[in-house]
Amino acid sequence: MLPKKSITPRLSLRALACGSLVAVATMTSGCGTLLPNVPEFKVTNMKATPDELLAPSSDPIDQGSVKPFTPSSFSPVEISTPTEDQTFGLTFTEKKGPWAQTQNTSQLLANGRRVIDPQGPIYTWSPLSDTGYITYLVQETRVGKVQDGLTHYDLKLLDVRTAGKTPVKIARYATNGARHLWSFGKDEPIQVQQFFLTSRGVVTLREDSTVVTYFEAGKAPFTSALPVGYKVADFGVDTDIAYGKHLRILQHRGPHKLFGVLPSSQEELYDVSFWNVERGEKTATAKDIVVNVTSETSFRNYVEGKAQMVNSPSGPFAITVEDTLKKTIVRNLATLQKVTLVETSVKQGHGFSTGFETRRAGGMGAYGKVWVNFAPANGELSNKKIIDLESWMKNPSPTLLRPAT
Image 1 (cartoon, rainbow, N blue to C red):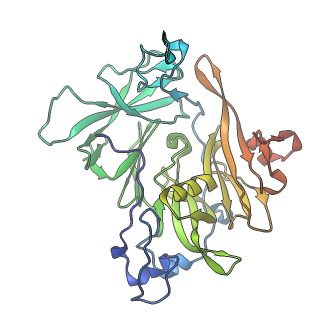
Image 2 (cartoon, one colour):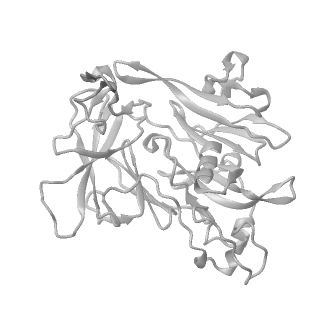
Image 3 (cartoon, one colour):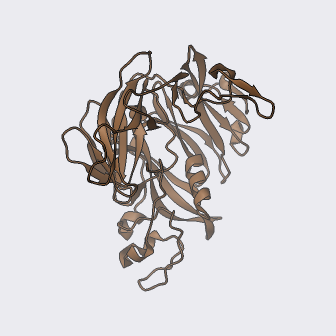
């Protein structure tokens, strides 16, 4: 059985030491105090010292401590599965209407074409692609049942920009549902906790989501350890890492103080940084993001909603609501350009959504423009939509605004 694509970070309160009690937001100072019932999904770190946790955050872009990079060619792929659509040779039933009886809705479509593998059924695939390639797992059936008790898969790479390309095996995966082993080239297998398929390889996580291995076809795997106090936000991967090279990582900072005084029982502050998996370094840090911690769903929604990512031809964008709900900032993680979109003197919601336009052209998702749709409480941009974010970052202009949709 294949693992889920995202697994919640886990925390054992029994593992907390006296020196790291400051990591718990609602705790009083001093060893021997009773630990609160912290939900397991919260990303509090067990390895950081009080001094490390209390040190002020800084943005590497502001410090000038990181260098830009040049992303590969931007070639978005439309990945989908068959639906109730008359393009798939349908029959008509009185109760359901048109239905794709000749198509399996678990099949993989890339740019509107079905993808098959000569070896056997495709079990799972990269959910996003901005490189013109996809990867997928197909079970290794030619060797029969092996003695190790694991089910073996091949990870294959396919160029889907044109028809007729041959898939290439680039890695191997074996699992029994509890153990997950990846093999790259002639290297010994590594055991991981979870993984994300990218359009050109795979990202794996281990040691409680603090150690990242990035593998891309044609390159040696690269393993990096996150800075003390951080964990990967191993949910909501919403960009193709093979193109953008970045993951969101989280550090717990403490309680969100209402009116600057009273610690909130529902909201806490996190730094969300963006980790370059190919270089093993922080590119940017969004400071003091307010996160609702009342439930796992709320936690995820707040992190995903207030630290969104979207890829563009010039690089990956990170758009964040930070500084305790007072600023909305966009950063191009490739060019390192940083622009404040919204700034208010008081804490407001700053809700937004972002994405990029695609147009079908012979089945290929053709790039349009990165857009940002603003909700109320966004200052002068309330209920408005920036239709071309790249142009706005160079020269904000009313011609790039439309009513929110």
